[in-house]
Image (cartoon, rainbow, N blue to C red; front, side, top):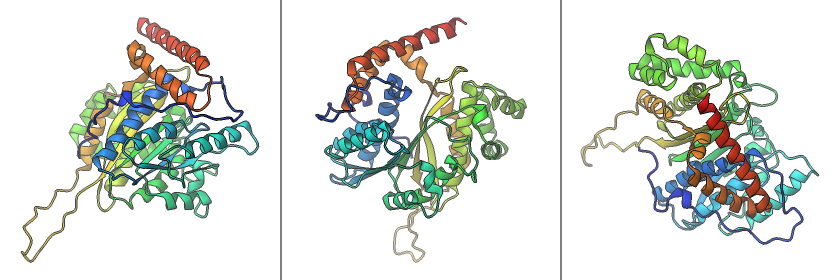
Length: 406
C-alpha cells in the first residue's frame, strides 16, 4: 500500500484552535523548553497531524467513532490539543492514553492536572481519555496498572513515543526499564488489529546512547538484508555516503561519528528491526516510512530524530477449493527485502529541520504563529513566547550560515 494520500486542506493550514477561557492561577508562563520551539510545530503539523487526518479520511471512519492514541504528552498536552482539532474536523472522538511521571505535589503535577482538565473539557475528546502519572516503562511490568490500561485502550490507531532522551540507551532487562522493550510490548498489542496504524518516534540519537545489545540487534537486521539484496546494499551505501565494496567498514565507522550519516544509519537499524518483527507476524505486516526529520539540541551536530512510520496488513482473501466462488489469484507474500530497500531509499532524503526553517523565512514565520496560538491555549504568555521564538529562529539561521561558511 502506498503512503498516506494528500487530503484537502494543506496540512500547514490546519487550525489548532483558540485559547480556552479559564480562571486558574497557572497562566502567563514565560519559561520555554525545546519542545516549544517553532520547529516542533513543523513536526506536530506535518509529521503528526497531517498523517492522522489522512488516515482518518482514508479509513472513512464514521462520525462518532473513536481514534485511539497513545502518547507522552508532556505537562501541557500540546500534541493532544493539536490532534483534537484534526479529529473534530472529521467528527471523530479522540481517545488518548498518556504517560507522564510527574512528582506529587509539584508545580509540574499542578500544570498537568490543569491541562488535562482543560483538554478533557474540549469538544471531541473522549470522556475516558486519561494521562497516567507513570513512566512509559511501567508497561513492561506484567501486573502493572499501566500495562492493564494499555491493553484496555489498545490496539491504537496511532502511537507517539515523543522522547527528550534516548530510545536505545537501555537494554531489555535493565532494572530502570527499556524503551525498546516497551515498544516490543506495544507491537504485541498492535498485532491484534489488521487496520492501518501510525507510529511516531522522537529520540535523541548519539553513538554513546546505544546499548550494546541494541546496537547488535540493529546491525543484525541490517546485515540480513545486505546478504539478501545487492539493491539494499547499494541504497544503504548511498544513504551513508559510502561504497558497497567496503560497506562493512563504512558502517562500522558511521556508528561512531555524530553526523547526519549516523542518524540515517540509526534510523535504518531501528526501521529494519521494526520491519523484521512486523513482517514475521501472521497475517504479515508491512512497515513504511512516511517522513524523517533531524535537528540539533546538543553541541556536536544534529542529534535528534523524529520519524513517522505506517503499518499495514497484507490482504488475505478467502479461497474456495470447490469451484463455487470465482477463482481468486493468491497474493504474493510481501517482500521484506523490498520494504527494506524502500526504507533506505527514503532515508536518503531525510529533512534537516533546522536548515528547512533557516532557509524558508515564510515557513518559519508560519510555524512561529501557529506555535504561539497553541501555547496560548496552554496559558503561556504569547508575547514573551514570540520574543523567545524569534530569537531561537535567529540563532538557528546564524548557526546554519556559520556552518555553511565553514
